[in-house]
Image (cartoon, rainbow, N blue to C red; front, side, top):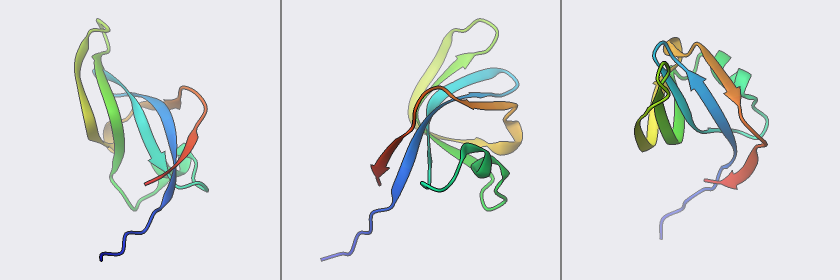
Length: 90
């Protein structure tokens, strides 16, 4: 039997703006970590986003939806929370 550890994470509903897109989805952080801490951390170069919907920033048209994407932090212009966070076990 394999050992599988559970790490509790906070799911944060977010809007991420890049140069040409708006991305709506869920970012997952450790309970003691804020979204700002995730962005300022040098440990990872990408922000993991689940349940992502990508829109054209100019027209607002939905371009595509994916269950997971990794957004390069250097392309993020603005990131913000859209509502309350929830705890979950991953």
